Image (cartoon, rainbow, N blue to C red; front, top):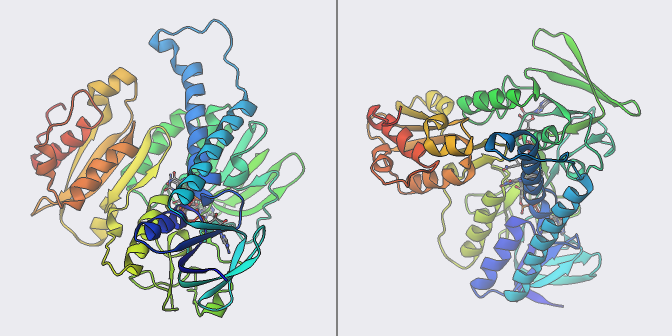
Length: 466
Ligand code: FAD
Ligand code: NAD
């Protein structure tokens, strides 16, 4: 029987990063993945394919809507080749997942293909392409998540679909009705809107992206409405039925009136749930909480002393970079180090265009926590860079402590917000004040000047360009 210092179950961004860090720290490491390709949700049916489609559909939209204003005239018709767009996406996924095989080889990590299940807390049975049992001193559970649904919905994967099917549709829907105005609904909604679908988002809460700063919800709603996406917020979906070529969605609005939506596809994107099927956690003494997540302590240790859990299968944001940080954290903990994660400083991004990015506390959270704060905001439209590219929607908002000026939250809507948020994370990691950011030189012309200007506005209400 092969024996290891560490076995990792699941090869998503949590699992494969944990395995690499364990190997770097000199531990004999194995990784077990039930599918033939590694990389988990993120690389196969999540972050990477969705961003490939967002980028391709953005090019298409630019070609049909914006080339002309830049003085680019197309002589023939611009034609969408969805099959080719999907093939390109598949090839991006393929290259990226193969990269993980390379990294496993490079770091001398043994890989097993099959479902891993505990026999006890040191033995894991693998069933699938590989059939064997291995022994491990420590195990890291990184089994991720699957799409969640509502109890009355039958996801038939044909007309009533999750993100997994939405990433490989063979036709552009005529009308895509999306249940859930969160990250998946808005990103994939924008993809199909750009490709020509009518898109309606039905959201239970009174605003889309309800966990982000309210100003961001408002701005993104405004921009997406301009793009002709329809929104039905404060709507509680009560039934979803596939009637053949159509899906009928019934919901009640806040006045309790029944509203009916009809589309040829219905995307259910109401969150994800932790995945632990087949793990046989009981045999290892690993306990779950009432949300189906694996229960962990502050060291991400489960109720079994030598078993840890990370990523989507434990509490916290379901994000690839959160899973990665936890993978490194656990590997270093097993190696006897004392790592640290500041969960408040894990950024969140929605890859619509304009992008939406956030770190730290929202204005609503500061109010709830009764923290006295200052707010500085700067609109993207006041930047030369934004006018040059034509990306004038959005803003940067910086919230800082009223007394100390320490930056408490940064919320951005705008071109390349996903990259701009890194400056805010760095500043907040070093506990910078808004004035610290305001006094740093930012290259001109860049979108990052909006960060400096918002910091100036937060410091003394002295933004320079507005
Ligand atoms: P996963 O990536 O889910 O990996 C778990 C792996 O474990 C899977 O490969 C699974 O097959 C395997 N497994 C499960 N059980 C067993 C078993 N018993 N034996 C062997 N193997 C097993 N996050 C971002 O940060 N940015 C984004 O842009 C982003 N976009 C997304 C877009 C979509 C459409 C979706 C669905 C998600 C997106 N996410 C994004 C979320 C991100 O994909 C997840 O947070 C991330 O993949 C979680 O990583 P993980 O390692 O915890 O689990
Ligand atoms: P989400 O939690 O982002 O959004 C779900 C939305 O559905 C929420 O707005 C919620 O209020 C709404 N909702 C819940 N029940 C509803 C109901 N009965 N009727 C109508 N609306 C309802 O979840 P998601 O968009 O499904 O994404 C799942 C996970 O994947 C998220 O945790 C997210 O972090 C991750 N993800 C991240 C990215 C990214 O980082 N860019 C992209 C895609 C997915």
